[in-house]
Image 1 (cartoon, rainbow, N blue to C red):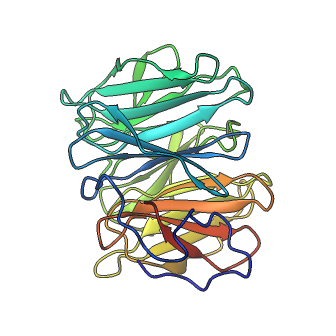
Image 2 (tube, rainbow, N blue to C red; image 1 turned 90 degrees about the horizontal axis):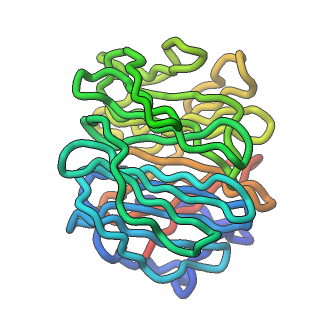
Amino acid sequence: MIVGVILGTVLFLMSGMSGVARATTPSPAPQTVPGVSTTAFGSINIFYASQAGRLTHRSGTASGYGPVEDLGGVLTSGPAAITIGSEFAGTWAFVRGRDNGVWYRQFSDGLGEWSSWRSAGGRALGAPATTCVGDVTAMPIVYVRGTDNALWRRAPNGTWRRLGGILSSDPAALPAVGGGCPSREDIFVVGARMDIWEYTDGSFRRATGLTTLAPAAVELANGEVDLFARGTSSDRALWMNRRPSPGAPWVGWRRVGGILTSAPVATIFPDPPATRVVLALGADGDLWRGNNVVGTTTWTWREVP
C-alpha cells in the first residue's frame, strides 16, 4: 500500500510501530472485506476473517491497539460490525457462516462479555452489511446479496424482505458513527454493469462511478456523504467522491491512492478532529488503515498489526 505524506501531528499512530510496517497477525483471509465500528468514547473496533476462517477482533484508540481477540466461528465471508449507544453500548459482528446464512456475536458493555454465536437466518452470496436508524435503543438492520442476486434486508424483528435489484457485489450501508445511528437507511451496491447504485427511500437510483467490488460510504455530521470505491481494471487504488448534502450532485471522483486487494470499509472517528477511516487489505494481503482529517486532503496509511 502506498504511504501518504505524514501530517505534522499523526493521528492514530500505532503503538510501537514508529512508521515501520508489521504484518497483520493472524493473517487475514485473502480478499475478504474487514468490519469496523466506532464508539462514543473514542475507540475503534476492527474485525476481520483470519486465514483459518475465524473472526478476529482488535480494539484501538488514538494511542494504539489492544491484544488480538479470537472470537471463533467458521466464516465464509468478511464481517460487518456496528456499535450502538454510549453508556452500556452494544457491539455486533455479522458474518456469513458455513451454511451461507448470517451469523453474529454481540458484545454487551453492561455484561462485559461476548454472547455465543447466534443465527440471523437468510442466505447470502457474500459478506453482510449493517446499519441502524433511531436513538441508542435501536437495533441493527442487516443487508445481504441474496442467492438470487437481489438485495435483501433483515429488520430488527428478524424478518427478511426482498428489496430487489440485480447486484454484482456485496451491499454497503451507512455505518453508525461513534455509537450514533445515521439519519436514514442508505445502501450502496454494484449493479450488473459494474456501476454503483444507491438504495434509499424504497427505491434504487444510479449513484456515480464504476467498480468491481463493494463500495463503502459514510455520513458526516453535516449531512455530507462520502463514497469510496476501488478502481477498475489495473487501477486498484482507493477513490473517493463526495455529496455535500442530501439531494446535491456528487462532486466528482478523486484518486486517494494505495493498492487494495479487498473491498474497502469506511467510518468516521468522531473525536476532534473528526477523521475519515478506511480499512482494506493491501497488496501484501495485510490489513491497512487509512486516515484523513476532515477538511484536509492528506491521507496517512498504517498497517494494522
